[in-house]
Image (cartoon, rainbow, N blue to C red):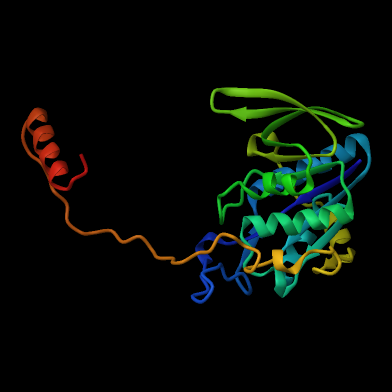
Length: 260
């Protein structure tokens, strides 16, 4: 079984900085962690490997420092690590990111691709499904339980607002997972030693045979025009009186503000 787990190194939420020229996140030199949802994706891939055999390859796109996230993933059970890192990838939106990941996955090959349901820095939940579309394979989002996996087949539970659906699919397939799926393991001493020795495979546009016009800012249809911090206006109004009187005054105030 060939399994690829896509992970993302995200900035520590207290250390986010924005490039004022490109309106994109500054990642170089910023304390970072593995996206928490991706840890559940990694655990799912390792569990399948331990049950059925095979190989888990962890894949990420980012600056050179993203190698740290890959080594951490190896310490938790991944067998190989691939880093997509090149200036041509900088500033990618979800579309360009998915295109790049899909190009790499085509070169590596996989039966199952795991992704976290979303990244905590962007919160779009778009990259996983978009990657599946570029690969022209089925995808199942919000996977909360894997019921059965066998050669060419998988059955899972997909989390819904009012319960869950049972979904079957042929392989290859891409799954995005939620935190209810499992509890990620901690790195073992043996894993940490293996991570130090692991050779990280680095790929750029030529290695994945990507169209450079589809990469980075140039290949991103989404353009950020402006970023600003929300401003709160000072001043509060206390309404006295009986509840009925308070409601009447509140309604008039809202009408005056054209909220109703």
